[in-house]
Image 1 (cartoon, helix red, strand yellow):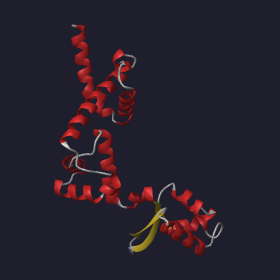
Image 2 (image 1 turned 90 degrees about the horizontal axis):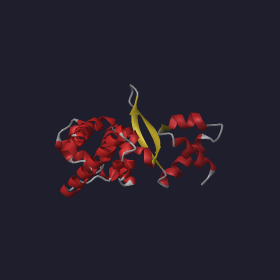
Image 3 (image 1 turned 180 degrees about the vertical axis):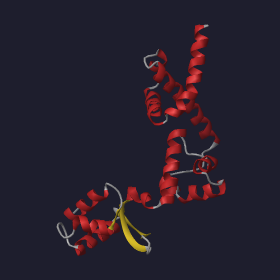
Image 4 (image 1 turned 120 degrees about the vertical axis):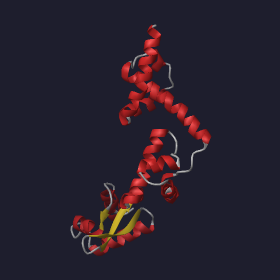
Length: 198
């Protein structure tokens, strides 16, 4: 990889940029505009970056935006929202979301949700979850939330120590990322503790 390619890839690591911004950052101090375009074309041919035309400003002038493959979804508002929603739901549910779950989260109809889910499936890996996947993830999620409640109220309990380290790791993640889910389990925890005292 050439010096010029490395510089462009390093700059784009922070997110997509229009060609005009790349010119300001690199030309003429590091390379000429001609060299910049030649390097951008080469990186695009090698699938290391993507170039997406976007309209901007009052005159709706077309601009070339460049991004790393992993950031290309950031160039499309619709794609960004759908991809991020599916990823978030997958992390929260421990499986791919159903069409109804996607529709509810995005506030759209199931008919629109199914089109978007399949449209961006190459980006997300999405597929409709089977009844078995839904059942298994529900059991796992219930256990993880229960562990999270114990971690919050009694982290040194024997219950937590007896659990699989991977499940405890997930529970800690849920405590950080989805703390609003934990109070639902706290009710169970308090009930359980009350019954134990009796």
